[in-house]
Structures are given as C-alpha cells and as structure tokens.
Amino acid sequence: MGAINYTWLQQYGRITTVPGDEPVWEIHMTELRQPAKARELLDVYNKHLQADSIRSAAVYFMHSVRGLMLGIHYMTALCDTWLDLSLENMKLQLEVQDGRAAFRFQLLDGTERPHPAPVNLIDTAQSSWRKDILTAYYTEQLRPLIEGVASAGEASLGQMWSQLASMLRWYKTTALQMNIEEAEREAVMEGYEHVIALPASLLGLKKNLLSFKPVEIDNPHQPGETMLMKPVCCLHHQVYGGQNYCYSCPKLSKAERQKRYDDILAAKSG
Image 1 (tube, rainbow, N blue to C red):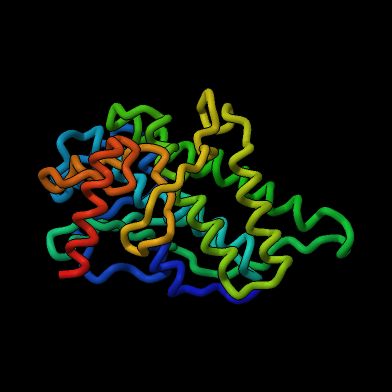
Image 2 (image 1 turned 120 degrees about the vertical axis):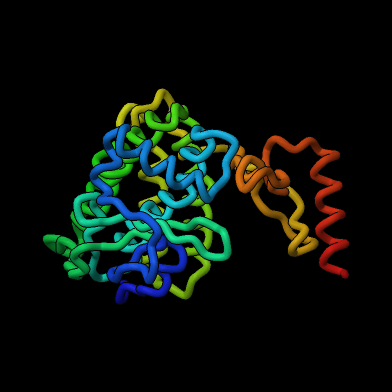
C-alpha cells in the first residue's frame, strides 16, 4: 500500500480537499438525504444538463456519485491512510465548463488517518476492517444519498444503483493492471467481491445490482480487442438536448451497434 494519489482522486473521483474556483452552486452533502433539498439540486443541475426530465437528471447524477464509490475502494485497497468521505465531511459543488455541468466533492477536513492495524499478520483482521468499512460506506453513506436523490427525481432505486455496476467493475480491472503488489491485488479483489455479494436488503433493493453478467462487444477504439457492454442505459441520449446512444448501450440492436462501430472507425480514419 502507498500514499494517497490526490491527482487520481480528483481525476476519477472528483474528490478534492480545496474548493473549486467558481462553483455556480453548492450544498452540504448531508442535505441531499432530504428529498426536498435533493430536488433543489436536480432543478439547478438540469438547467445546465438539459435532460428531458428531472428523473433523467437524477439518474445521470449517479455518474458523479460513482466517484465516491471509487474513492472508498481505492483508499481501502491501495492506500496506507484514508480520508473521511462521509457525507458529513463533504460539500457538493456544481461547476460549468464549456457549457457542461460537472460536480466536485470538497472535503471539509482533509486529514489523512491510518487504517486499523491487524492484531498480527496471520489473522483476518486486515480483511475484516476493509469489509466493515465498505459495508458501512455503502449502507450509511451511499444508500441514504441515493434514496434522497431518487425520491426527489421519482427515479427507481434499481436504475440508480445499477449505474454504479460497470464503473465498479472498471475500477477492479484497471487497478489489477496497475504496478501493485500481490497483497494489493488481493485487497482490490476482496473489496470488489465483497460489495457485489452484499445482501440486497442492505442497499434497499430486492437484488444486488452491483453484480451483473458481463457481455463483451467489439471495441471500435481498439480494433481487434473487446470491451464490456454497459449493464444498463446511462441515459446519455437524454441529456444536453438529446444525443446518440453510447456505443456500449444495451439498448442498441446488433445492427445499430455495427453501424456505430463502422461510423467510429470511419471517423478515426478521417
């Protein structure tokens, strides 16, 4: 395990210890557990997102929430210390750059804290604390946040949670490709396998949607290789006034995906 890479946290998690330059709106994260406050967020967000409905804005907000998920997995598996990613220690700031809305999570207290130490190196304490932290984060931090925003946007909890599944799997795959020690690889896998096996009831669901059967499709960005189809639609086609479906969207037919594949290759070749 090593030091926290703050550049990685900001790039992939949008997590920072300093305020943004010019946020157009901000709120303390604990307030978003209340549907009325979450609705304020969605109304402001959608002025810039231009989604076809507040429901779509709520689901699209999960693109930002996944940053918190990445942060907690990253720090519990690959870092010697951890930052407090609780809702109580965080402000959400909305920024608009080149007409595009983006959120950042500003930590109010950026103190690094050591992880719990195992009693000895041969027991399971190290594994136990990691699982305990992940379980607590998903149930006590992510769940009330997601439920507040889902209620405000009249979105289904299933559609909200399922937006995290492909990014969680991406993190696992990407982390395992890093230049890390075997113990760190085991920690990454342990964290991933633990949360996809959490009882659905802990997430407020009937089924744990973080687990899904991967479907591979041809990768137009790296011909000859494959990529994963998304487990659910991310609603990209319903924001910014309407756009194309993602190439990896499960809603595309085989013929539609092939046309998109050909179009992407043609665009790359000029």
